[in-house]
Length: 424
Image (cartoon, rainbow, N blue to C red; front, side, top):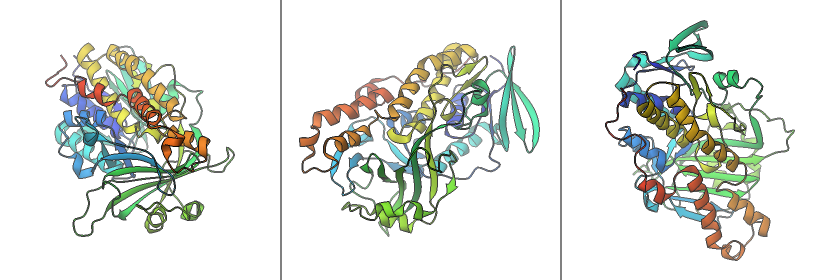
């Protein structure tokens, strides 16, 4: 096995999980991250049990409660709080591993701290933005812009974890064009309030074109009874609306959307109050990209959002990035540190990720809301008269199977990387 480190472009959740995985199996790595200083930016995300399992296998299980909440319930509701569908999640549902609602930035910092502890402070080079690559026979050269200077770093392999605007993917697929806007804007924020329902519930309320998603992402303060509550206000616009952009971190004006939520009245949460009390709100156009026919070019491959950016309708983007990292590591264990390992990873994961992208556009778990809206305009006395329990349950189970976290299959599945596995 080559002693030269493999190169990872991007120090987000995907790249850092891959770095920890490679360290676990004895593969040297270097991570190059464009940000000059990592800070816990962002808002809430969800990590499904299949991905939580992998973080636990990386020895991070005790740290997860520090950055999030073990989710107990997941449900869809009208704007008045009528239940369309709800189900237990994580340990409450019978999984052998929990589901977590976490602050994305704090999860990234947790992974970064673990990389520095285990691999050393030089394992991650900050302020180094990937700009391209050159396949060079038995090695790969990663082109970087580091502190305004162009440079190249050589290694045996390159894994591109450089996100939505991946320069590596752009070189692979030069005619792809910009991300595809869904017509929806996600207005996101977080503020302290009392948790609702189970105390660790995730609620998705509203209609197909106007939604409010909320869940706690911190432990409850024993003195105030409050936790940090993440919320997302999703509004859908005409295709020619001026927000047809893909900036993921722009401060927003509440006046652009708050009026849409003034008549909402669920009995267990107050969306208007959460919006009004949040100091900073961010605007995220909801985008994805079409599946592509290949993620690999010689000694370079894609992972995470660089490979398969998808709508957040199934709460599966970060989870899939973690699974990517573990599958790449499994490829190294089975095949060695070479292009065959990356081909094995792509052959297994790319078709699955492609189906998830397409499912997010209309056949994900959120489609239960669309069906109810079509059948009764979202107005009902008994949801079973509109959509029987068995039909709703089958829809929920279908997505879990597609995403790889249905209970029976996951609980029976052997680890992706067996304990003690090493390369070479």
